[in-house]
Length: 95
Image (cartoon, rainbow, N blue to C red; front, top):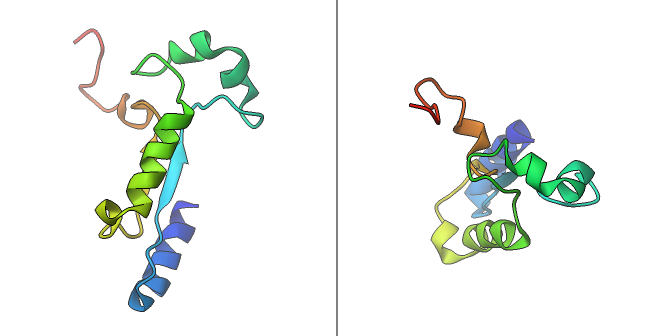
């Protein structure tokens, strides 16, 4: 999906069509029943200590669809409570 987002953005930008993506983390849903049925346990493995909410996803979607997102093109933004970057070297909770 990340590659497809980039390719579509490159193809459609000359026509003033913005293409961006959202990479969701743990959100309770039919697709992610573990996050739905075990929110507290899943949240323990997320830097923000909770699963995502409808408002978290809606806020990012509204940002990308608004004037504020008019210069974001070809990127996929992780909406995951910090999971994607929590394991980078030097990022230890105990540090």
